[in-house]
Image (tube, rainbow, N blue to C red; front, side, top):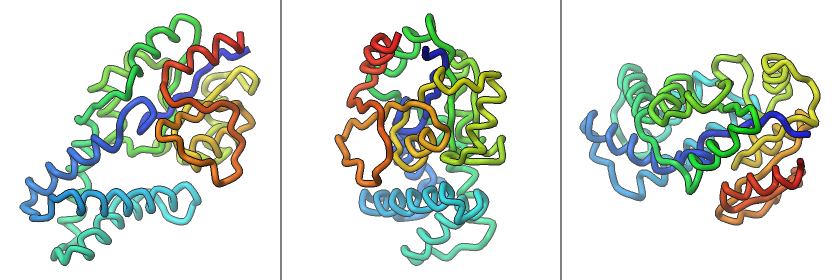
Length: 233
């Protein structure tokens, strides 16, 4: 019987893409960088995605990705920078990410409804500065029974070590009691596979699972989580 819901944050409950665009645009303005067009924002998004996937694979440290993504981006646009600019831009960007809150479809309604019957937890790889801000400014910190930010834990999704610490903190190692809801194949779905728990893939864009990762349930809207859990009772 499912007792514990593990929720991803970015691009599951909250739209990271919208927050990213808003935060980058504000960063361009603050630091006087004349590169705020749609093409540049898409270029940065692809660089950022690449770096976070390297973190998931253990190929880079968190510190390396947080600054390396901006160094690569600035190089592409011939922006003169030094260590201070990169660090200042990175800090401003993370703080802005915490302020930009855009809920996906019916996320708030679903969380409130499920809170009556389940313990709900956030499981996220985002930086502590950004994620703490998002949780506070969205009110999610009042909804969740606990929050597991990988930067605090010393391990990232999809590692088994990350989930072992989650189970230990919740004080249940019965994996039949857990289900993870997330959008990412490489961190959320693979992470649930590594941890031996069930999963729900939030896949609003109807992407292909081309990695051969076990998916228990696929949904295109978050309210379908309620139906799945009702069927599992």
